[in-house]
Every structure is written in structure tokens, then in C-alpha cells.
Length: 173
Image 1 (cartoon, rainbow, N blue to C red):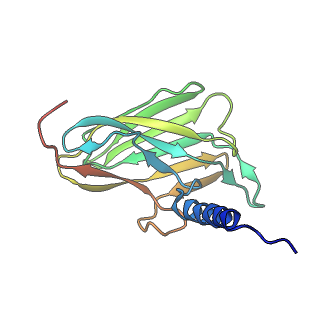
Image 2 (image 1 turned 90 degrees about the horizontal axis):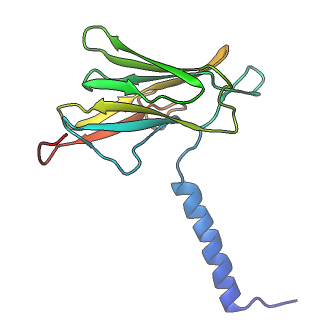
Image 3 (image 1 turned 90 degrees about the vertical axis):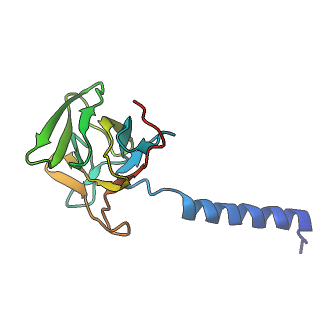
């Protein structure tokens, strides 16, 4: 029987502990999530966020289906919304009546987003005047199937993403 040295045992333990921590702390790649890429949202400020669609949908048998349309719902507190142009996709924005916000949509004109790929769908905006956390629901369509990331609870099966808007410290554009 071989005896493992203290140094090797410590290395193994550190590796297993690190893997466990990373497994717990890693983001859920199965969700539609807002990406800020180092940016921050400040009241009345201009900026951009990206909705990351991390996979396709599943059909009735659990088989992957490619994403061919994405809708991001931007709340009425946001003062504008402009979609990023993405090659192979057409985009549109529709203002929702009575201050309801904006419906930003991308539709694949070529190849759809396969299940083994991800895509970031960018929205340029003017952030709300009031600090707070704002939900940003998204719906991904995969032909006859869809996944709606709209649930309010963070621990739900399909939680919506959110953006935290902080108070601006000085006026800027």
C-alpha cells in the first residue's frame, strides 16, 4: 500500500475544495442573464446591457431546438431602448402603450442559435430616474417551443434577470 505524501494530499484537497467552490459560485448558464461587461447603471444615465441567451429550447421529447427569435422586455421606467444589430438577425423595438416600456425583438434571418452556442443581444438605453432593481424579462422562441425567463423569484425555474440602477453621483451623458 502506497502512502500519499502530505504535500500531495494537500494539493488534492485544495483542488477538490476549489472545484466545489467554483461549482457553487458559477453562474447558471441555463438562464437568460443580463451582462453589463464592467459597466454600471446610474440614474438618468445612458448605457447598454446585453441579454445572454445561453442555450436553445427543448421539444416535447427533451431534444434541443435552436433559438430563432428573442424578445427582451424593458420596463417603462427605462427612458429608451435601441437594439444592437447582430449579423444574421433583424431587430425591432416597439414602445408599449401607457408607459409600459419597450419590447425589443431579434429574429434570425439565417441560421438560428444552436443549443450548443450562446449569443448576447444588446440594448442601448437611458436608465430610470429612480435607483432600484429592475426586472428584465426575456423570452426565447425555438420554432413551436419557447422558454420565458419571466418569473419574479430568483430561485424559480425560469427567473427573469435584473439590472440594479444606482444613484448618480454627478450629471453625465
